[in-house]
Every structure is written in C-alpha cells, then in structure tokens.
Image 1 (spheres, rainbow, N blue to C red):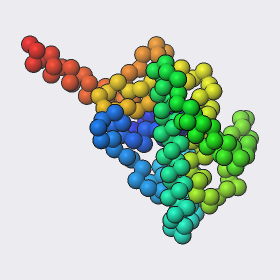
Image 2: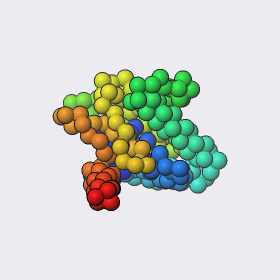
Image 3: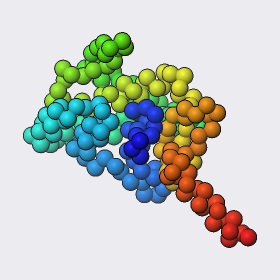
Image 4: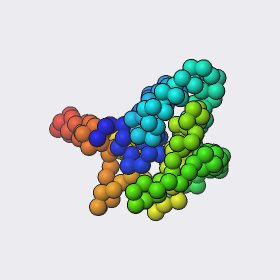
Length: 199
C-alpha cells in the first residue's frame, strides 16, 4: 500500500496530503492544481483521460484553476479541523463544518447515482472539464464519514510531528500509527535510544 493512501477513506487520505502536520513547518504535498489532479488519478477518483482534459482546461484558464485548487484546500483544512475536534471530544468549529457542508452540496449537485455491479456509487462522468471536479469525491467521502458510525474509529497518528489521520480498522481498536513501518518504527527507535541514554 502506498504511504499516501493509508487513511482508510478517501477524505482522510486527502487530509494526509500535508506531511508532518503538527511540526512548526508542515510539508504541503499538493503544490498546485496539477498536483491535485495527479493525486486524484492515483486515488482512483479521476480517470487519466479526464485528468488530461482537466490539465488542458487548467492551462487555458489558470485563474479558474487556482480558484478550484484553493477551494480544495479550504475543504481539506475545514474537514481536518472538524474530524480532529471530534476525535478529541471537542465541538468542531462551525465555520469549518459549514465549509464541508457547502462543498458537499456543490458536489452532489454535479453527481449521479449509478449502479456498479450490485451496488450504487456516485459518479461525475457528465462533468468532464469542470475544474472543481477533483475535490467533489472528497466532499462526498467527507460527509459520508461524518455521518457514519465509523467516525468513532478515526485516529490521529501518535508519531511525533506526523498528524496524519486514519480509520482504525483493527479488531482491538488500538492502532496508534499511520504506518507501523514509518512512524511506529521511528517511535520505537526513539524510545530505545532514550532508554539507552537513561541507562
């Protein structure tokens, strides 16, 4: 599994496009609109053929692309603060929750409910070329999670400076790290050296 897709839900993976969130200088993993489109392709929410249409539209209308990218970031940060507050037993900021709701309303307006095999799914096939297209599935995923019992399983990685969010799907509900091989291993090494120095 790719390091960038460990959240368990699309909306959480999108939140995790900021690395080292709780450090003084977080690292932005989505530099611009083209980075957003590329991430959407890797996430499987935008087909490569549609991504090429979006990239061409962004080159032709750079200001509109910048606005769409800014909207995606606003959605990401508003959802992040909403989920984090809930995970800590706090009341989410009203402005952030309102941003998630308004983004969802815009996304659903463009969506169609289609039958995929034996189940239904949201699709946006009729909106190719709309520069807001990449963040629509994220908005839908965000509200689906917020209104699901699974919200209680959202955790924040305990790795120092990490801040990534994930859905704890372990049977014991005791998962602590976004990645056992990443943050989990770094924490084990840190504790080992701390014990060594203390000894």
